[in-house]
Amino acid sequence: MSSLVLGADGQLGQDLVRLLGERSGVGRREVSVADAAAVDAIVASRRPELVFNCAAYNAVDRAEKEPEAARQVNTEGAFNVAAACARRGARLVHFSTNFVFDGRSSRPYVESDLPAPLGAYARSKLDGEVMVLEAQPAALVVRTAALFGGLRGQSFPERILGRVESSGRIRVVADQSINPTYTRDLAEAAVKLAGEGLEGVVHLVAGGCCAWDEFARAVLGELGLPAAVDPVSTADFGAAAPRPANGCLDSIRVPALRPWHEGLHDWAARWRSART
Image 1 (cartoon, rainbow, N blue to C red):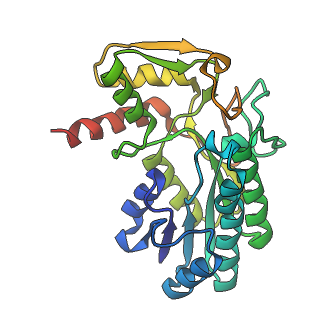
Image 2: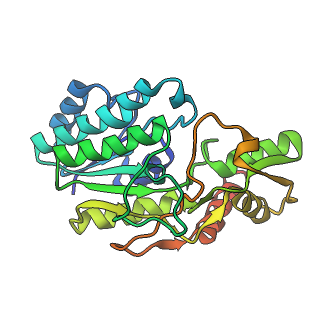
């Protein structure tokens, strides 16, 4: 099946391209999803049967000051991709986020729960979901959480390592829970679900939840480094954008991916191998 990966330079995009072949990848410098004509042109010229839209404005805090920039990519861009796919007869897999929920639930969120986004980034992503399904009702919208997997300085584990190396100790939020999801696992599962013809909204995350500070300690533990993590509250951390305290997802439609710590173990092995 011929495929196209938009946003191929991100962590998830890289792993999808690894599975689908180098020719499938289109980075943001080649095509901005905010450019409707460029999106339509690439879909028309490549004629893919399946399109994965990984392109996103992910600067959660900056979005509070520039909400229109977030909307151009996460809402209007998502619509541009879905509309082009509908015109050209391509199936679409669009990736969204756990941030569409307000985090006040006492349990992980499932697909039937009512979204309630808290900030500009979150609103732009939820609006993007709506626009995608209006333009192409047969699209698959994959909500996921806390992605990690890259080896180019993009991932949470790498940022943690960089901060430990520079200062010896780090402050990490301890009152927000997430499913740390390994992008290699997510990419493989998304390709499989697309091949099965699944449609609508689905939650696809690693098994298990943890707080960000627990995740940071696990990263350091995997690499044999001292745990130099100071837990802080969301309020004390002082981020510009509100975030869901409970960012954990579950699914009533598909099984979870393998437990998050197993994905982290594999990521750590790749990280060590890349530096030998």
